[in-house]
Length: 285
Ligand SMILES: [Zn+2]
Image (tube, rainbow, N blue to C red):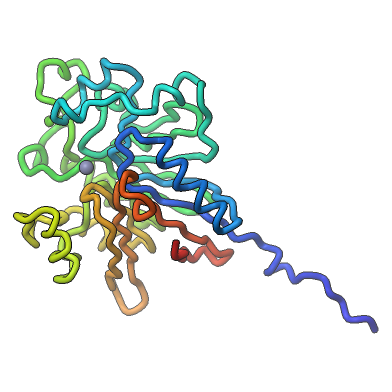
């Protein structure tokens, strides 16, 4: 009998590649360049992109007025090209909000929405499914003065309140995220507390000399990781590449992937392979 050379069903199942991107700060073309060069170098196609906030999707100058940032950083960026249809973004992108965002625009969609073709904002807190993965995202950073028992200021008040009143997540949003019970991927803007190694801290302090261990990351991010037990946690905010494996039990470890910003080049992106067994494996780039 002739031996069959047909491919077994398992090897026919395709692996999926997806990318995670750190803070974009409006530089969408720079992000696209990084993603395209990865694809070209690896001869593989990316299926989707996850982004960890400080995306800065400003439609026009009025949106800039609702972002918390020093005046010199209030630049329109590339989003108007994609919003108007002048340029196409070739991958479905899913992003959360950071601390520098036009919340006067984004807070129209607290439960998330596609804000331009392929640009999907998750909202303040959300759980979505992409490629069979449960992805939980929480927008904003931890600000003690905006957190415990606080409600979110409304959009109607945005011209009368400081923009920084909109950049924090609030206690009820963390409770909502905890109630999702589990996740495959957790999207956060700021880091998880208690993860930076002495070596990485020393490197980090070369850039920010007054940075202290206890100021890096926040305990609510850590609580989310410990409760939802995601395979993968993605964060940005610090503009610093770092990886950490957080053991949660004998069987479960969360891989925490902290990304640089897109101006810093390829340290801003990480690419992962999703196996047919739903394992998420980082591909060195
Ligand atoms: Zn940030």
